[in-house]
Amino acid sequence: MIFEQALIEMNIPITEARNPITTTIDVASPDDIVKKLHECDREIFNGWNQYKGLFHPETISTIRQISEVAVDIMKKPDGMIVLSGCGTSGRIAFLIARNFNEVLRNSEREQCFRYLIAGRDKALFTSQEAPEDDPQCGIEMLKEATAGRNRVLFIGITCGLSAPFVAGQLYYCMENINIFTPVLLGFNPCNLARNIKIEKWDKTFLQVVGLLENQVTEHKAYILNPVVGPEQITGSSRMKSGTATKILLETIFVSCIKATENIPSNIEAHLKSYQDLCEVVYKETSSISKLVQLAGDSLKAGGSISYIGWDSLGVMGMIDASECPPTYGASLSDIRGFVDSGYKLLNNQEGDLSPMGKYYRISIEEFQSDVLPGLKESDMVVLLMKDESCAVADILTNSTCKKACICFNSEEKLQQDRLDCIVSVDLYSLTTEPLGDQHYKSWAQLYKELSTKWILNAVTTGAHILKGKVYQNIMVDLKVSNNKLFFRAVGIIQNFSNLSKDVCQEYLLKSIYMTDDLSEDLKSLQVKDYIVKATSMEKVVPTALVAAILKCKIDDARKLLSQHHVIRTAISDILNNRPM
Image (cartoon, rainbow, N blue to C red; front, side):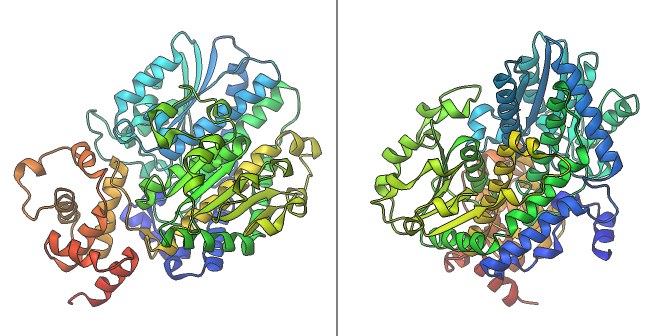
């Protein structure tokens, strides 16, 4: 309780706070890493401090109301449901829109879901920085997507209530409230929305939230913001917040689909089924931790991890892989995702992007031609199997790489001697009441996706911890690739140096521009200019952090870091031996 009160007094957004459960995760064994991740994931369902959580009556009521609006819109020939976000939020928006359009297509109904992601379809694979921080870009994309539509449910996803791209879209919806029903989906209380002026705009996100709250009181808009607690790795909203986003959107739209088919829905029971799933997945902690160890060994040896997946499980692999470069400073080659049938399966709006370069070549056939011939013992391939019919491993038979798979209810049917690790999730152990057997048969893929997300998040988080990319529970080698990460980097430096925010920002700028003398011209640039410069650079934050702690020159900080192969060790040694 003391910890939570301190956050309130310091006005720290909960999504950016440090989780006390994981403060020693950087020195934990793979088994303990997975156990700590599990304990934090339980907070999604159990609630956090005095804030409303997933099962709070207000949350349930808001879910029900949004679902009713969605039902109404699906009945209209000119209706559309738009899901929008940046980074992980935009990728989850894509996944949900894709999945529910497929449900509608299979029942020969109008496909009315549309996703928007800052940076367009390129951002499904790689971070696209500039559009995330541009409210006008968000507005123009929304206008383009909804042209000619007279009734639109818009759900803007921003876990920290901070994304300028989404802020612009929400404001545009309120300006055209006769057409749009805007929904803000995130995981901070409204008063902790970001209150920093958005560049190229005249508002803060907090001001947009204030305007939206006025519309909520008139029942023209909705805010869905249960609190799920701080992330396992500080600020890494790809994890708990990404999971909660998927859970909430699926709960809304499963209820909606059932309503259109005159099938009763039970929102509380649906949410509870995901809580039960969490326990079923983490029953496999032993095998998940073995997979974490193998992944960590690969990254530490300079190897790579490739996910090969079937159906939407392959999409989950691609999403997890895409999140590692901005979160951990990983290269695009470190972790990659490939899917059966490539873009045909993906069914993204812009179609085949493979001509854009090797990191957009995503089919299993392209894995076989581009990646497989070069795999070594230090590399690992993880198969994401929808069922036992995806029998692997013929394509991997002659490779010396490590081989693992994630599967469901089918471990005994696999050729176990050909695999180094198997994680098998027993979905049959889920209690079917009160939702009934038909619910689980109809929506089994959603449970497989979420299971896969939890496991892959554990794998890449654990592997980067073992590689030394995390100090305590802070990602000290993040890419300074957007506005949110710029200010998070300043906060990391401030946290360990005890210097003022302005001084810490100066150290960050010195690291970006590799100078100890910042000109007034450099200091007067906008944050977007710093981001353009920093995005392609390595070890920006560790260098600034070391310089701030030791009050040394940037060049000296870089030399100190170069003496350590592991960033976590470097930071730890410098903190422990700094002059008092």
